[in-house]
Image (cartoon, rainbow, N blue to C red; front, side, top):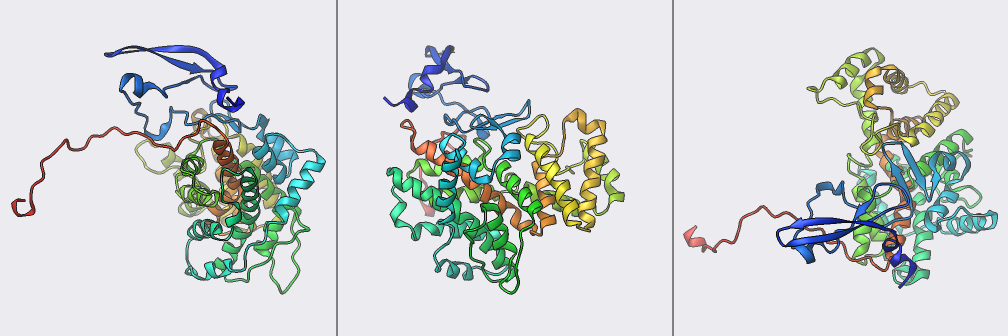
Length: 438
């Protein structure tokens, strides 16, 4: 038996006795490296005839993972044991990508090798241009991304055998590399500008910005402050444990689907406003507030339990403390606004809202601090991205985490096709009535 297959069993700390009308049953309890103990209900149905009921899987561990750890109560986010703030301050996005995929930070040679492997896969097949032309000009960028990422599988038949480690490796490099190119092409298509080919002399983040904002008619120089902010956004969004889109990638992958299809499924899940659309919702909220003079009124509405209005970008479902990613993004946000000197009333409104909320005792008591979506939305708007592109950039960054999670699942000898159960509350057996008698 492999080491991976025995990892959980070696951590059995105790058992929980379940009393049912069919007798008493012992359920093993595992102790993780960090986080709450986990009760194993794998054999529950076979031994008791009972299912568990957990809408949204909020109390269910769907897998064993060594990639990302979150402690929402304490405001902790770690990739492979490393604090997110340390990685964002000191690493390139490619270093973090390699860490998530392989488990260790690279040395100098490993870093250079991995960067070369990604850099020389950034070009996409020329026929991909025709896929874009098939979309309406006003198509939502996420609709385009779902289509073109899934379409990659039609070009790369040489890397679709998920049981082959070499194929998985090649698909990993291709997806990370080409996602930036496809995202940039999606942006260019939306604004009606020509596609810009990738440049191998630029870093991953610089190359992406170049493909988005350069034009053939004049030279474009990437602003270092903007590049640094984008690098941090990518790092902070690279993975976030078993959220909706990551669980979607794992579930799709459990069927044996090829990695391009799995990532396309993840993009579709991320598209939802309750998941990847949160930073776009921040800008929509600022439009609703309108001006700085209206902020007190809307803050009052946010405090009113009977008012449906919510301050978007404040608080987080997982983090019951300060979002650790927001601490990093707050610094970048102010740096970008200062560097670009953007004179935008909406951005000024956002900064005033941040100030008032942080000074208000109500928000401190409720721990409704600005989260990563609040700051990332402001940064992306200041850089020049339309709100419809925000979730695309989220998908670009999260692709690294999705692939890491997908690889971990494929390499786990205990993985089975996902098959959740249900609590059926529909009609019982009914006799069929012919049409003439209905």
